[in-house]
Each structure stands twice: as C-alpha cells, then as structure tokens.
Length: 274
Ligand code: ADP
Ligand code: MG
Image 1 (cartoon, rainbow, N blue to C red):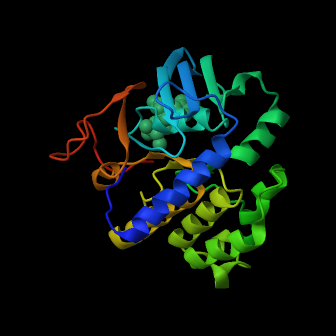
Image 2: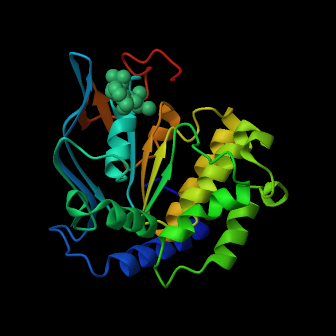
C-alpha cells in the first residue's frame, strides 16, 4: 500500500479496511486472510480477421484482492484493454474462466451479467464512451438503472462526486459541449456512481496534463480508500504504476508480474495510443 504516515492516512486506512470487511463478509477467506474479488484462469481472447487470428489475450491468470490497487503496463496493442473488458464482463473470452466475487461470469446470461456489472463493477474506458445524446447528468445516472443493491444511496454520494469532479455547473450539457477533461470526469462519475467493488480504469489519465492526471489519480485513490474497492488500472505512467500495490505487464497478450523498476521507459513503448 502507498505509505503515508499522518493521522488522516491512518483514519483513511481504517475506513477502507472497514469497507472491505463489510462488502467481503460473505466471501470465503483465502489462506492469508485476504479475499479474492477477481480471478481469471487461463483466459484467452482471439480476434479473427480474414484468415488471420490475433491472440489479444493469451492464457491470462490473475487474482485481485479486495481493495487492492493493481496497475497493468505494457506496449500499445499488447492486449491491456481487451483484458480489462473481459474482466469487467464487457466481452467474453474464447476459453478460460473469469470470476468476480466467486461468481463465474461465463455462467451468466447477458441480462444477469448486465445487472451483476451494475451492482459490483465500474469501468472508465480509454475513450470515454459517453452517450452523445444524453447530458452529463443523464450519462452519470445510466448505471443506476442496472443496480439494485439496497445499501447504495445516491444523493450524498452524487453530490460529493460532482463536487470533487468539479462538474456541478456542467451537468446539463451534452458531451459535445464539454472539454476532453470534463468528458473524462463525467466518465469517472459514471463509473463510481454505483459504488463499485472493483473499478477498472483504462488509461484514465492518458489524455490529461500532469496536474489533471494527479488530480484524477488522487480522486481514484481516495475513492478506493472510501469504498474499499479494488482498482485495476491500465497506465503508461510509471509514476502512477509506482504507487500501485502490484504492477503487472502485458506483453503480446501474456500477463506477467513486473518488477516495477522506475529507471527507464517501458521496453517497446512507443508512446501514444489510438
Ligand atoms: P492495448 O490496450 O494494450 O493497446 P488492445 O487490447 O486494444 O491492446 O488490443 C490487443 C490486440 O488485439 C491488438 O493487436 C489489436 O489490434 C487487437 N484487437 C483489439 N480489438 C480488436 C477487434 N475488435 N478486432 C480485431 N482485433 C482487435
Ligand atoms: Mg488499450
């Protein structure tokens, strides 16, 4: 965990621990007492284009614990987004298994999976994916239609989100009337509105300058502390990866631990994406 020594940090840690205990009380404990909220076993995802087969994700094995911050790094095209979409239940693997809170996503119907996602998972996409015909407010509230957890109360949470994200006077604008940074913040609010237990973020700071990137990262980390949610983040930013509990690297579809050395660029990284 990112080491902070002051009292406020200690309090935040206690709140996070309590949140984790609350939402994982019903999960079986693992050997060391931590609980697994996400597990992939030998996950494969291939794309067929004409005669060619592209293996975007090759036998990915991953375990993420409740409240953990996992960063995934890797060159453009190495399969990071595909893996994130699979874990978030937005895409189905060709083979292998993905479990969230012990429930296998492949055993769920599309409808059940949609509801499950709404209840437990949040996703910040690489390219916002806001619905262009809906206002910022409507975009933020879309996931609430897919959530039936009784303990989720929106009013206070919503107010704090839009204040923290500085969106209060932008709520009735369409995405096309917002700056790139504002669109990103709307996408973040949408991902957080249901208080997810796992938050997936695909290069959430990729298009932001350093100051805005720091602000967004700060918000995601604060949210993680408050909700006790796990954070699985794809990033090219090594200073962000350095703050994760664990860093993994995708290389040509293969996921492996990365030693998190900060003394150079990622091998093979040529900058920019999409
Ligand atoms: P990253 O996020 O690391 O840049 P992606 O997961 O987007 O990588 O892509 C991994 C590989 O899968 C790339 O070779 C990409 O071209 C391919 N790919 C991704 N999406 C599709 C798709 N819908 N159809 C065909 N190929 C795809
Ligand atoms: Mg990507």
